[in-house]
Image (cartoon, rainbow, N blue to C red; front, side, top):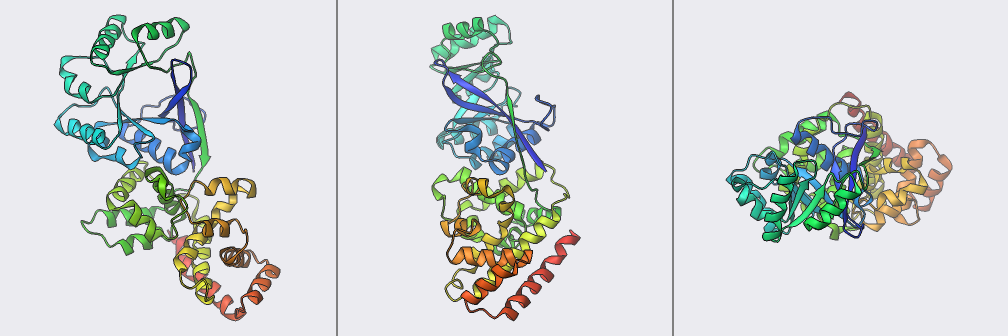
Length: 404
């Protein structure tokens, strides 16, 4: 499947990019909002930006402005994203009640910036207005409304963002109003970013849904399901990068990744993927091969004394083998999106060393490159018949993937 997202830059008054608003797009040709359910469109934006793409490629060193519906705010979904990069936009049509106000208050206490989207000040919005840090003023509304809202913002020391600015005259008008940021077609139209991405297999996804819906699920059961699905594994690692930037280059197993993430975040991640309406896809063969290599790498590690102490790391390395499909030139760049240990990254890139040797042995065995296989088998004094039996066992255990 292909993932799409549009971004529109937000500038300060010196024409420097402060951040990007991330916008839903259903395909690469139609560069406008297509009117799907608000929860679903936000789910697509978040999952595509943070799981399908590298968020730092999308927003650089700036902020990500993301619209969240009232429902997603109350569920705490914005907390999946680091407050260092996310600006939480509250939609103008959100039903304002105490639960919504409490959710916004919680986000502020956690360090998030709250932006009120397309906001027109009214007394009934005063509680929400107090919680907002940035007020986005729609320049396509009546001038009287614009000036009334701007007056209240100046009086209350709120940051103003003029949106839908379409001319030099409107830009000068925004300056006179006291706006700090601007956004609109006068500066730049939204641009679409896309990438081909795997989607989790339906049966695996449904099983994960059932597990995380339990009050106290067994983490080992969750690890077992994710361990047989390359797409889930990739999304899990990208999610950790978006929530905890400090763990880059530290994850060496799926169980460790889940411990870092925590069950609450995992539930919300699964919830968002479900809202993308993930269904059966054509990636079964890619999944199967990745799973074979994951199992094979772990079994090979168990045959080598210096590798046998951490077989789960070798399993994770094999599961991510399909990343090599991007080509050697882009592989290192792609691996930067995942908080993996250097050993695993170097192994996948075949840069030399124990992890590299195990990966090459598994990868070349599956492809029938016997000269490389024989060389590594001899180097580590492995029994070639046991290696062959291990590979056949891994293939047999992975055959059921074809049935999903």
